[in-house]
Length: 309
Image 1 (cartoon, rainbow, N blue to C red):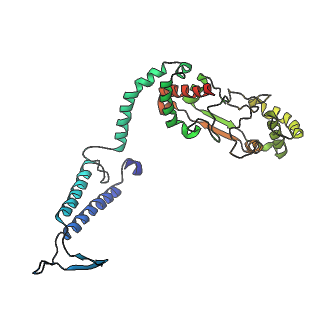
Image 2: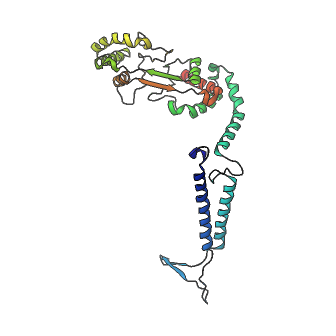
């Protein structure tokens, strides 16, 4: 109940739930007992009157519930009352067992930590390049990756719109083990500012120049005009030649790898959108969620993907 209503219900709502729950059970018991007997008596031949209901020529006799059926209903009522005594279900009443879904989850997590922490701690002592060559460790690492990373980077680690491909050799912050560990432990916050203040003409010239850097089809005249603008406003992050800067997370603009290229979108359109509106990328720190031992293992898994490329 705490997930839906907070830590506890107000007195009114707690009483309301108790009344509705116990009232429903009481009403069910009354209906059950009211139908236990009938005022109709069999005639001399043992026949009982019908209720007047008929379907496909089959008539319903006015008989009480069969004994076994009645007893089954009684058992369900006893079970319901017993459950409400043992477990939470009546407003703020916690049940005599003190069970809660949060408590059960925490207990299961503690059992898992006790069982698996020594294994992860053992892996943490192995250098990432060496760990990446261990098939058994990588099977464990893949499961950790699928549970925590695949939602953004994909089950095949090839990323998607706004999420980097982890299987190629294009890394915003560097693909060495120490870089991957820093990313996983501390997270990353990328920021590409919007440049609408440059005006439409300069944005188009810049677009054509960036296209020329990766040898995409472009307007040579406009690209030449955009080169000076690139040097004035873009080179500080992306470098004079546009090859990027891993210290800042500024992407390489010469390798024809585009993080924000939507399926079916033209490269030029993606570049224009980036220049007009900017981009904000966020990679959350994982150490607080999965622990440094698992971070080390995932870093080795990601590094192994790079080696396999």
